[in-house]
Structure formats: structure tokens, C-alpha cells
Length: 106
Length: 406
Image (cartoon, rainbow over the protein chains, first blue to last red):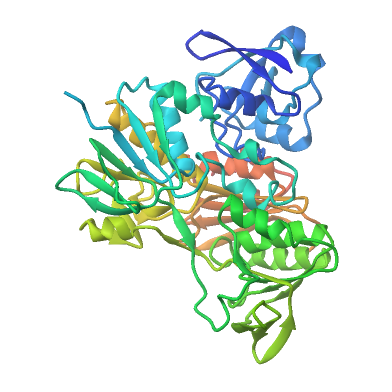
């Protein structure tokens, strides 16, 4: 279990406890975090679950694979802190992770 | 005075997204979902992929946890089949004889597998793949050495073939058309998927019509073109038909699906239709069509939620689709039907990575990308922009996808 803190597009802070083994996206969608669309449900096919990772967390997350890298490259609003939240599996090591949700996923 | 609820018939992903979007928009009215399965809204795409493969548990399919519906004040009437719609009384009737009045009705009844009307098709051991229950029943048979015959080489059939082959099942796919996935992709991509499955040990027979099934109480043989194939299990995946009978009987226009405008309204202002059951005047494509795609269902749900809450309609995207088979991700965007030229990037005859682009008067209108996320993502943008592209650049791997515009 890890507590993940999302900053929603309107600036609201939304903390979610997510069980180990789920993706961050799944935890966010089930708790209705605003701005995470996740149209493909976690198949790394749509890039609509993008989040910005707080600076002090970027190196502590598992590396991107080539598909995630390629999908991100063409996301609107992408920057170097962007990740697809469906590709990050939750474990206790992520407790306290801070993420920002973009204004739009499209 | 009590106000009748917003009623959603069907508890699929469109219904799930609709209540999620309504909650997000802080919709103040009450909502009732009436579904004929025992489950709250769940995701169907993983049914023929990760859920079938046993990689995810059933609770990971659910769109929202049970607590969400309580909190949102959404009533779930599950295991309940709707058998009648009275537009004058603004009420629906359930199989058990109950009546439920609505203020607004959203028909999200989805589609069902096209049944095979062949001798022996009702034998035990002839199955379809549409629901959690279907997959649980099919999965039970997927053991090494078992013989699985799949009727229909579309997405469902081939995704199932991939999972089963990886489990050591002897898989045969019988496709009536001259090529697999003919409805979804172009011939180059079909040929690739036939090669892919053969490399993985699956037998694929195209141009092969099944004429019936035989067995003593239980399926034993599949008959096709006069031959008999021994089988432990048959799964039929020959397309889906819209569940639009309720709408038709209530006098709403039905043409392949329930006819709706760009905002998913039927000709009755109190009734919307979304998802697989709806045939929508597509906001981008200048034609009415019924898409069997989760992206389209979600988008339509968001559109209706916005309309109900008096918000502007959300931006609509180019339709897109995907399929996962083995280690191959196919991502498609746009509709290729009206193309006049085809450009290939990469080598479809070797390896497992290439893209096929469909052009009309140099405008990119569709893409089929096989393990090519950059090609897919960039094409989605180009299609939406209605960009003209340079075919020579598009077909040249040395030119970056960002530089293919004319």
C-alpha cells in the first residue's frame, strides 16, 4: 500500500491509498482523481493517463520501457517529468509520491 | 414532488463512464443503472487479453468500486433484464414485471455476439466470448494439448488464439473471408497476422466455411468444407450485433444501431443512446456509423454527461482501436475505407514491427501500426489535423514521423 498525492487540474490535492500490485492509474481512476482518462484501461495504448512526477521522485520510479517512451513523446503537454501512470506499479516504496495531473489528456 | 431518475439501460463501460462523468460534473439528480449481468460496469477489452490469460483478477475489471455508486447515489439494478420501453409514460418494464419511470433515459445496451445458425451450434462446448462468465467458462478449457477451434478470425478470435497458443492449446482458426481481420485492417496487416499466428503454432485456414458441429450431447467435431476437425472446444467470434430491439419496438429509428445525432440524442428528446448499440452521426467523419470500440463508448458517455449537465460537448477525437496478441501491439486510428493510396513503413514480411498508412488525395486518413507507437501517436494527430503528408517521407524510416507533413 502507498499513499499517492495527486494535484488535480483545478489545483485540488487528492490523496489516494493504492494497494500493492495495482498501477497508479487504476488507483486514481477507482478513486475518481480528476483528469486521468485512461481510455484503454492500462494497455499503454492511448496515453490519456499522463502525470507529471515531482522532481525529487523522478529517479526513484522504475524506468520507462520503449512503448511508454514513444507514447509520451507524442502526448500533448508533455515534459521531461511526464510518465504514463498505467505503467507504474504501486509498492510501499512509492508511499508519499506526488504527481500533478495535466489540464488535458487530449 | 419526487423527480424520476436518470435511467441507464445496460451496465457496460459506456454506463460506467456516464456515471463517472456525471459525478465529475456534480450532477445533482439520481441515477439508476439497470444491467442484465450480475456485475457492476466492467471493462471488456481485457476479457480476451489479460483476464483470459489469468494475468488480472476479476475485481481489476470493474470501472469503479462498489463504494463509488453508494457515494454517488447511483442505484445498481443488476441481474435485471429490460423487456419494454413506453415512451409516452416515460417508463421501462423489467422481465420480473417491475416498472421504472425515467426523466431521461440512456440506452447503453451494447452488442451481442452474432449467433451462428448452423446445425449443432447449440451443442455443449460451442461458446461465445462477450462476458466475464463466458471467459471463466472458456479459460477452464485452456490446458496443454486441448484442441480449440475458433470460428472467425477477427480481433476476438485472434486474441483468444494468442492466449490459448501460449498455454499450449492446439489452436485452429477458421475464417470464411479470404483473409483475417478483414473488417478492421488492410490486406498487408492481415497477411502479417496470418504469419504471426503460424509462427506461434496456430493453424489458420482462410476462405474456409464452417457448415456445422457434431457430437453426442457434447461437441466432438467441427465440419468445414466436408472435412471433420476434432475439437474439445469451439469459440465463435463472427462479429456482433447491436442490442437495439427495445428501441425499435418503441418506435425509435434503428439502422444497424440505434440512430442518434452527434450528441447521441435519438429522435425522442428524453432518450439518448451510447456505445456499441448506437449508430452516431460522427462529429468528425461526416457519416453515421456504429463503432464497436471502447474509446467511442467512453467519448459518447462523456458527450451525453455534458449534455445532461448543460455543458459544452467535449472535443471528439479520431476513432482509434487496439489489439494485443502475443508480444505484438496493434494500434489503429481513423477509418481507411475511402483511401486511394497505401504507404508502408518498415517491413511487414519480416519481424514484428511496421506501419501501414492510408491516404486519400495525400491526406492521411488512417493508420495500422504494429509495435509502432510513434507512428500511431503522430498519425492520430495528423489525421485529426487533416494534414497532407509526403508519401515518400512517410515510407522512409530515416525521416522522423514529426517531419512527414507536406
